[in-house]
Image (cartoon, rainbow, N blue to C red; front, side):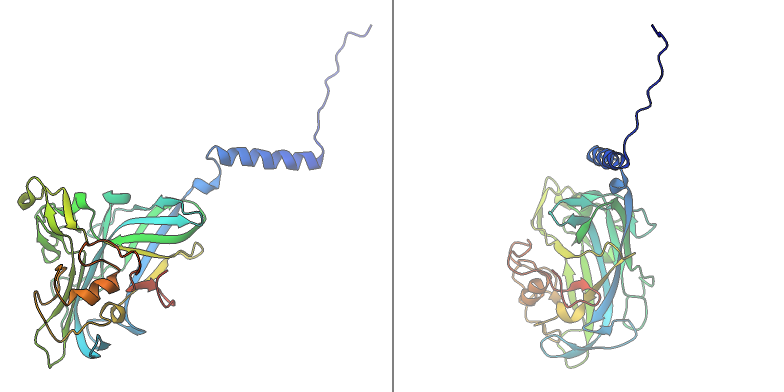
Length: 310
């Protein structure tokens, strides 16, 4: 009897090899492996337009508001936070903001915040803010995303800190109301040409009615009117940046920027301020509650080359 064992070579046919490879890849993906979870860079690139015309501190803005007034830009800054990517099934992935000196606090969700400044010093623009910053940068897990979503505002946990000694970009006195009120999330100011009853029409968006154990020292638990805008736009996963426009023509639609009917000059987020009625509608916010409107989306932010938000 032959007691020697001859090794047996087991081989898969090409068809079975391919099937095994597919099965292996599926199992790897199911376990979280593969390239789908690799971080991908996310950039929001912002620009300001008045309809189809570029906005700057050295030119005139024409056809603004209900009276088609001419005006000059004085300031255009806003905070961006809680950036998210959304896939076709509605699954949400947070974007972690990078740390950018003077402009971004790193973190995802309510931990991070960025400041966009589209007004360089010149003519009517704020001479104390000569620099501009036009982008928000971060990263997210790789995926097949169809939408990008973000808020115009500072998260509650960061909003009510003392502006003196706060980390940039939360250390700007011109963008701070008070410890109780927190920051101005959106700070847009224009000076209308004569005739006018006010020098500057302000759009200052921020939380109001804030309460807590010590609002005067920044210990705020909640705000009756949060006033944080939600912006949702289509996401182009093939683009190196999402080019986002803030359109002043849409912001001032239905607004008479030459007159101040009652309250603060312009709209400073007052719950009963007449000037805020059309402004808040354009921002997609309920003026009385400070929450996003369920029937009307914001209309001031859109993708470059498009006619409106989703």
